[in-house]
Image (cartoon, rainbow, N blue to C red; front, side):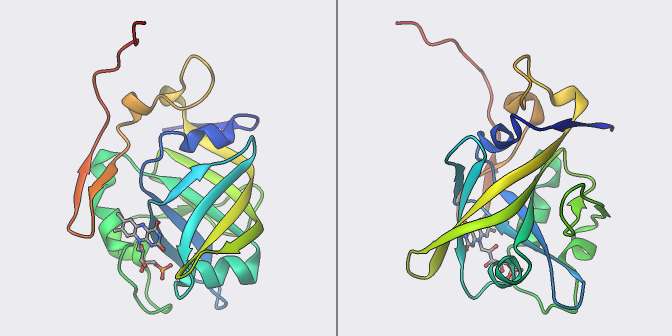
Length: 184
Ligand SMILES: Cc1cc2nc3c(=O)[nH]c(=O)nc-3n(C[C@H](O)[C@H](O)[C@H](O)COP(=O)(O)O)c2cc1C
């Protein structure tokens, strides 16, 4: 499926706050993929994510200054479990999940090719919040499968069937449904 470039509204690709997989580069050049659910968009171009400091993702972001957020659909939820496990840097979570990469436009870390939405980010600042660091990234650009474009130019979160983690760590995922206009 072809993807369109999303610039001014790239932050909105994560307004649905589904679980996502962050891709980063190891020192060796290998691709790391980690699952994250504690994040939100906090400004027109800013996304904040609580990332455990021992994780490869945290260490790679601090070393390279960049990362890619990849949003799966319902059928790809198994990858969230695969990338939720810590594996040695010489092994690939994406290989294990049966996924491939595509080059990003603005960063060296790759996109997950099969996922419907991807957001390229550069590290901006962080706040130590205990075990986690609240990493704030600046969005550089986004990619979205064409048929998931909403009428306002961002993601149609119902159609995209993005999985939310509703039980953790014992896995249970759900998708949004039944959209309604709230009446006063
Ligand atoms: C559904 C799900 C959500 C998760 N959310 C977070 C999160 O928000 N922050 C975090 O630090 N770890 C989270 N984890 C755990 C990380 O995925 C795990 O520590 C993983 O090993 C990190 O990978 P890495 O070391 O390759 O970066 C989550 C795991 C799962 C399965």
